[in-house]
Image (cartoon, rainbow, N blue to C red):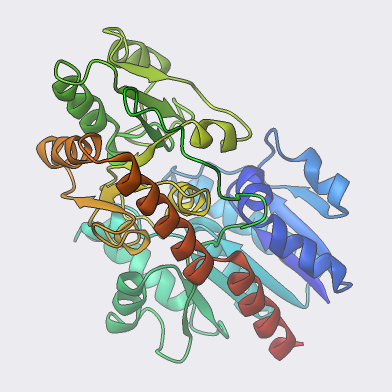
Length: 369
């Protein structure tokens, strides 16, 4: 089969879908990737995937720009006439599905989170819902990453119950992200937040909680890892990060291509997100590496944590709740922390193995062949 992949960044396809891409190539399929160019784009050629540059403002709302993007995706789809197309993130999903529908091509979208638009009830939110409903009408399957998103899409009629299929997030490569021993230094425990530096990821709440804990736990370490200044609404700039870390309580490491060494140095991975995640990849990677987790009760985030077993859940937008959870962790014994780490790895193995995700994709592609 000739299969088109459409996404809002080369990074996400290479970093989150590499195993799927490799499996489809092994099966003899021809793959075409349409995505914006970034540092990860050269990997497509190395893997044997044809790359089509697709300029895109992932957060823009200009009607003219969005129409141009729709026409670009339609043009790519019509030119290459794939036997099937796969979409990831909101704009590639909607515009890709609309294009495929017009051309009679099976399209399989993956809802990687609902974002903030579904928390609103204005004209823009209703427009987005209408576009989803129209675009997905002929999709043979729609993948969603947590039970709440699936229930919402079905209940509001955006998709039918028969179309809906629940995935364990994007899954995680358990061989690449293997379990590692915890640092084991009871006098210097490290909390690490791995995410894009967005307000909605709970970065400010994490910093405030760290400042509250620091006087009583002066040896505790608090680390931020991830890109800043993404251009997305709520993004924190480099100057913002300098301000947040000026007092020396929190360290900011910036962005790295391989997060594993940083996660390995962490005693606990924290994500106080109040963004409507699918299932955060950073938490899946942390679980796979055997790290206790502190996150919020937001859909997607809460699915990675069994309260008290492999971590703690806290209330979104609550510095006090995050501080309480981290304080509780700081007072735990090494034995209890190690048990939490083992529980995280076990949960990753049982629930979030990316082979589950790949098998779902290969199954639906075989059905559409």
